[in-house]
Image (cartoon, rainbow, N blue to C red; front, top):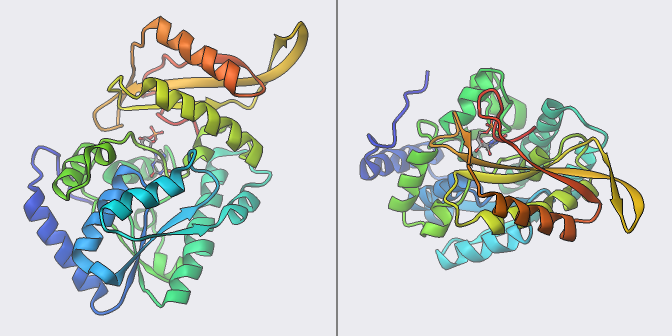
Length: 320
Ligand code: XMP
């Protein structure tokens, strides 16, 4: 049973002292690999890991082909300013090969998990001689996985999986007692600039969690474009999270006087504190029209745009 630390109880100074000591004690004189995706959780872990291990920590960003527009380059540039070197590993082919033909959400997550931890990190860890992988799992990831709601890509021990046996290395998870609001508080205390620790959450399986059905390079490109528009238009609304989803079923539309059996994009925008429950944000209708107009104009093949008005539960924040 993991002991939760609520954001308001969190004493950042004390927490940082305890966690850096634990990371040092685990890694001893070896090196560790740090998995950075650029999200709030992994960015906070990166700062914590660097504080604990300095040059003994090698931070990598896996380009799985499922990230948002220009995300790998932005993350590298961002951390460079903070004095942290980030290596980009191009693993796009491996991920798309693993996702080929898979439509089921949980199978998709499993394919991503195996490619990430076994194939890509397995190789990096083996080649580098490191024995530990540092990552930003938080309590909400664990809860939902254990409850069988969603198999979060980064949860193992609580499912009875020993990463040492399954992948050949140990996983360190210093944020596992926190939820998103606690991580943000910690990120701030660790010196992350506001535009990073205040970033909206983004799931580990990345845009593959936003495509219903097969995540092909082409379908990922469609959702990448729609995501860019949604993030830009909604960035100042102060919502907890906002996203676009590509549906697998098509609908009849018309373009230039001709039938166009096209794609459907669903927009979701959530008000939430910690992602456990959420309500759709009451966006002004004019803003929704603006989103629809931009998506229909700029994302080829889309003929329908909808806004989700269901709460979590029974919905979840992502669609896969
Ligand atoms: P759901 O969709 O389960 O999402 O309501 C709750 C929060 O978790 C994020 N999320 C994930 N994060 N790995 C992650 O690291 C995952 O597999 C994953 N799935 C969902 C989601 O974006 C939301 O903030």
